[in-house]
Length: 225
Image: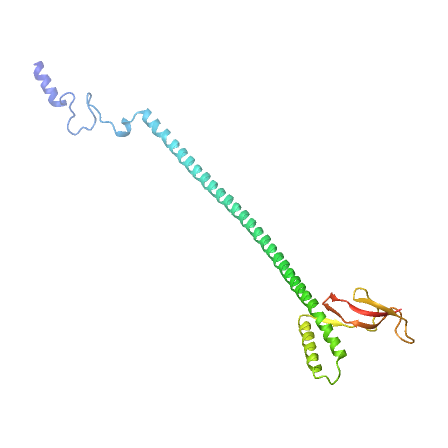
């Protein structure tokens, strides 16, 4: 009797631990399947939550490091530009000094060249002046009908023209006040009646010659007393 009653109960309610058809509720003794989220432990969830802020901080730190690197690179470029500008200014100053030195050298060489040329002309003129004096004496002593007179005049004229072409001119200071820088007094004479004032050149023995402001030979003169 007891066994038959138990069989009837099992048929009505099902076997223990087995879900009855159409009943969604779990029966006692049945193992439930946990969702993935539910299977995660609190420690793992905490670890995952803590990992995200750390990752963000690390990204911020790398971004800040990148910004500092850019600033350092810009500062390095600025320093390099400053150095280049300083070198440029130094080279410019050196070029200007070199140009000024060259200009001064050029002017000095030009002055020295002009001075050397003038000294050469003066030296040559001093060698020719005695020949001009002798030609003047020959012209004064020659007779008017002397056939050589015209030739001597021509030679004397050519020499004077050659000296004039290099800037040498003669001067005969008759009637001018005596100037020891330009004249050489050879003698003095009594002041003629109604004539030149005292200290005036009344006669020229030899004309003087000069090159610009340089006196090659002073005029040899007679001065009124």
